[in-house]
Amino acid sequence: MKKFYFLLAFLFLTPVSIKSQNIVGWDKHKSPLTETWHNAFFISYSKGWAILHQTGLVLQTTDRGKTWIVQARLGEGYLESIFFTDEKSGWVCGEQGRLFKTSDGGKNWSLQNGFEETSALSAVYFFGKQHGFVFGSDVVTRKSLIFETHNNGKTWVNRSQEIDSVVSLTDAIYPLNKNTFFVGGRGYILRVGKSKEGLKIFDTKQSGTIRALFFQNLKIGWAVGHQGLVLKTNDGGENWEKKNSFTNTILRSIVFVDEKRGFIVGNRNDKGVSMWTTNDGGETWQEMNKDFSNLHRLVLAKKMLWLFGANGAIYSHSH
Image 1: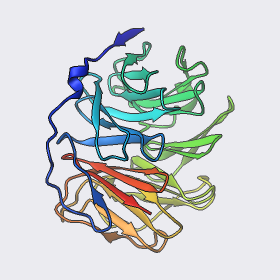
Image 2: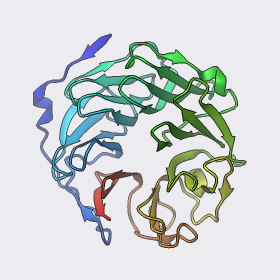
Image 3: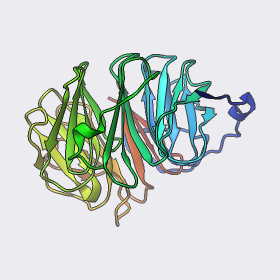
Image 4: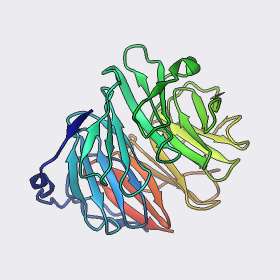
């Protein structure tokens, strides 16, 4: 297994203050980098990690986002998903079959062998330290990929043949409970359980690519994606209903903070809007901002909701 070790000197980049607009009710944080903050994972209220989309950077905060320190650079190319099972053990995946593992909280990362360069790995999730999954798609065939480990990544079993009908699994992943999670693709949603036979495919009856999932409870869930796609389920993912569209851009993330109040973010539309909110449980959505760059991710961490996006956008909202 090839090891990557990173010089401490790289951690001390000169911070650059980003001038970005305010969002009413949200706190704006200083960003040390002007690039696109694509995804993040918080292990606690104060401690979390973030990945930048194109430059392979991994950053860490230990003070609720007041400061972010560059921990590592995992080569050039897109990083898509990050997941930690505890404060020491974490995973990052991205394009060109790259899956990285850390055992020291992100200081050092090892590149995992056995994945083809044509594998665009888009999501990683673990039930515990030993049992995990990696998802993605083959950039040539567009067929979806799924790999499973039961030994903390020492070996991975390819289960892709079990989901031949699913095209292009994305970074749309959401845990329903401690035994089940969902991952989205183009027109389909895959439910994954702990048991060996725990793969079930749901056809959304829509052709659009799903980029994010969120469940308010065991029954009510949401999916958003390309061309303003918004879907809702009332039966735990068995059936999905298309909701009225309010934009034609890519929607990248959705979160509800309570039964009625939720947020959606994505690429800016022709009016410069990239964030919407609802106060009636998703029946209607209102514009929240204008003249913003693309926004990539909403992340819940206890009572804090984080927002990340292009041009170093970092915001937080207490709820």
